[in-house]
Length: 309
Image 1 (cartoon, one colour):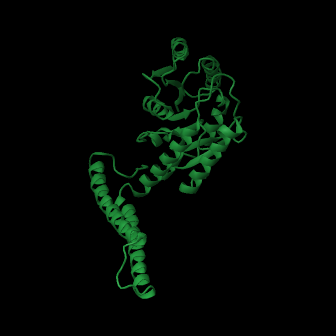
Image 2 (cartoon, one colour):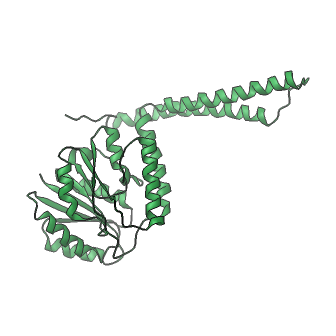
Image 3 (tube, one colour):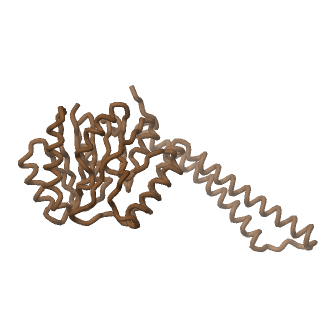
């Protein structure tokens, strides 16, 4: 089996030579053919120059260079499209993932389609990285039921057939195991080493947690309702309309039979009732529009299922 190692990098000039030396030392001990694909995500330091030197001295190395910084998800997507290996391994370029864990992933993937690394002894700042990561992993488990301890670990192994039709955008790279499990692939997990960052600065910030939550919500919606949006919006619409009708009827009964009013006053509750009924109708109409758009989408796209054999 041929291996493809996909590594997105952004301003990692002090790490590149060390990473490549350690990585090739591990790969050369394996019986597999391999290729290393670095994706330079618009680095502004000396990283592009160092990658050029590495490529010139290594026949197994490819370098993809972006015009500007697009983010990790596009970098992984570009690497996946370029990869020709039977097994594709991803990792970070900051020396926090250990290449010596690659044989462990290869052993584990014999019984799984995807193996996700678990940084069970993580060497990161507690408040800025560990707490957001724990929250993110909890939300993934809550919304999807995927029981992976560490969605954000970049050290993962994939069989090629898993990612051939994968569409990535936003901040979805951390949810690839979730997406693949929803497609029906078998997901495994392996405890891997994690090192403290020695050089360079982390690219993580709290914005990514919020963006990641939105991507997670979209993934959940897409896989549950992408071929039947009317069921989602229709249920939401009928529920909203029903609530509006109940509030309206209760308001009418209260005014006519409790307050003994001779005329019905248009108060806040009656306005809320009318608003909810109108919103319910809009949700149902939105569901019909979604159905029309989905039928157009799937007419020219791949079908909403995956064939194993």
